Image 1 (cartoon, rainbow, N blue to C red):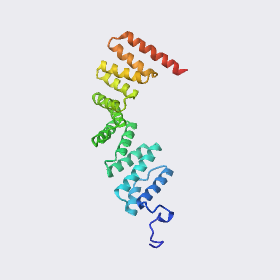
Image 2 (image 1 turned 135 degrees about the vertical axis):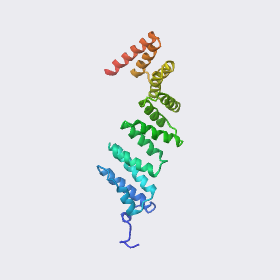
Image 3 (image 1 turned 90 degrees about the vertical axis):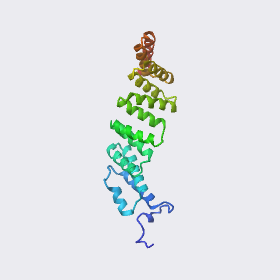
Image 4 (image 1 turned 120 degrees about the vertical axis):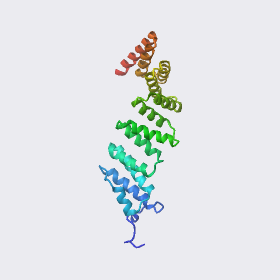
Length: 229
């Protein structure tokens, strides 16, 4: 091929084993890190010039979404990740990141929908279940929240925060004895956390176990004082 006929970028010492789309993707990511905003339609422009396939375009959108999320540009990051998923719907990592961005924006129904989609695709993990439980709790879907917190706790039994949030959801359902067990588990896993003692105290008081509740409140106060010193 003549010098004039070479595709741009090949003369810069790139690894010949990498596809042109791969080299373009890396170069574009580098450009994006130096850029302060996303230029709408840029991927389509590259596609027209270089005949990018769906896989290359999807990875560009995903890279853009990652970088924009790190820069705090959540709106543009959401757009990029949505475009990536339109090209490759089974990209679970992108779907989980999109759900996290929806949660940050307070769009809990959309976040829950993305997480349910990932779950339906056969993905099951502590992070997915915890996020899904939190979304349902925000939406006051307490039964669903309990289901997913319980599954998250089965996947990561030493998570005190999961046990605590399970307890709060059970309390909302008036399943008081179960909420007491969950709060006790949280307290056992993280005995220096005042909130867990306090929450257990309120749960115990709610079922008439006042003397035990008082002991929990005392312990919470001691821990709070220690933390404030």
